[in-house]
Amino acid sequence: MASPDQDVVSRGPEVSVLDKDGVRLTVDDAIATVTLTNPAKRNAQSPALWRALAEAGRLLPGSVRVVVLRAEGKSFSAGLDRQAFTPEGFDGEPSFIDLARGTDAELDAAIAGYQEGFTWWRRNDIVSIAAVQGHAIGAGFQLALACDMRVVADDVQFAMRETSLGLVPDLTGTNPLVGLVGYARALEICVTGRSVQAEEAVSTGLANVAVPPDQLDGAVRDLAGAILAAPRDAVIETKALLRGAQDRDYEAQRTAERAAQGRRLRDLAGVGE
Image (cartoon, rainbow, N blue to C red; front, side):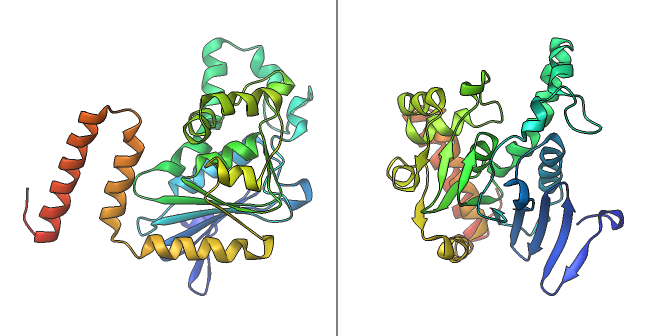
């Protein structure tokens, strides 16, 4: 759990673990909720927010099995705060222009640091669910893609606008996007910057299900409950198998399945390896 200086506040069964820079982490037994908390700016993102997301991942208690990512307001996230593109940048941060003037190693390290807020959602010991409403643009789209599953409101609008701005998606979104919708459609979505709405998101596998906005939280709760109904170790092994399937050929995947099932059978039988 968090240390005393991280402002841990108990609210009944739910515990607030982190609340800073537009990110709040609360934990209720096996379910953690990460909430984007700046609806006035449509949850626009900044380096400080990315660091807070990374910190949320580090602070997850071991009891957590499901992490829900949600956002306050009508938009999930409108993407990178446009202040990033000004010469001044954000207070106390090097501007993107300053970063571009640094060495290759410095620039690479800065971007790697930004990516840390997007990498932990696919850990094998948790299942992450993004609850997405309204706009999920650029960095917002990539944050939703960082999760294992996406439940969307039927007003959702995904768009990858980086290429239109002369940039590329660099917050870990390209790998899951290609895996979900295929190379040709992923390329078309990125280079045109067009919007993907709820019906297409579900039909292409980008979203698991679409519901009316007022049913979004309930649908996520139902999905989380179904995940928690299965034994944790079996979920962990299954997730690891599926995540690795794209990198293995058929025979290697068969081998991985046998090894995982052997571990499960020994565990259920109480037989040590």
